[in-house]
Picture 1: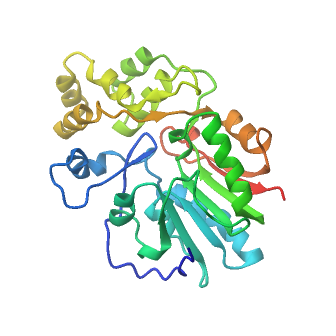
Picture 2: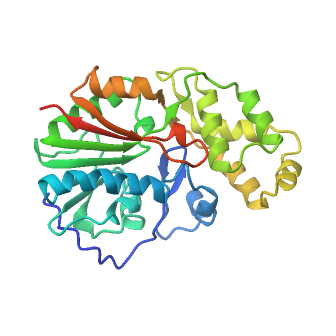
Length: 301
């Protein structure tokens, strides 16, 4: 598949994605009875850290800009259909290709034309060796099983990137000391957690006992739902009734999440299986930004 040159003249598709703890949740096409259809009206409640902020995109722009100034227009691979990646100021001649396992995500979320997106699993995408220069991913690593699938992706990226290739990923990483789920809920009830995105991210990280086993994403919402008189707590905190509905509807998510510490993540890229070196790590300033760094990893030929 030959991706088209980026023109930034998109004429279709919605400009946002609903994220649940790093999982890009598939919007529906025309079926209003599908479970995800109800979630679309709640997208404004799921901002950073579960969606990239303008600061996160600025990190990508600056780091990719350094690569471009030295080497010219890149061939870009976006793992997932993050609209903000397409909207970065890529130079004329940039080749853009997004890969997502969901055709619904491509149809509804990706701002580019159809020929700039490929419906495929990241672990089975059929791209020639050395055919991409910059690989982007927003919070996507934890949706892959650990260690096998995440290690396989590192090997695949090393193969498809050019010798001067760059991985530019926003990571979700565990704190060095694991939180207790009870402590997270207590802070929530006491009004010390600012939004639902932060609450769910912290709950998922607290509930995961090992990266190998992972955590079922819906369990975080189950834990929040278990808070006594949750509706009264939300009202006292000034959270809207729609939050209650969203929490209830997300309890059934069965997808798993496998998240590492930053050190473990960098070791995976640089040592086991390796093939990359750390070029730069940038940390955003929003709440929980220290758990959502943007990491630039240069390929070692």
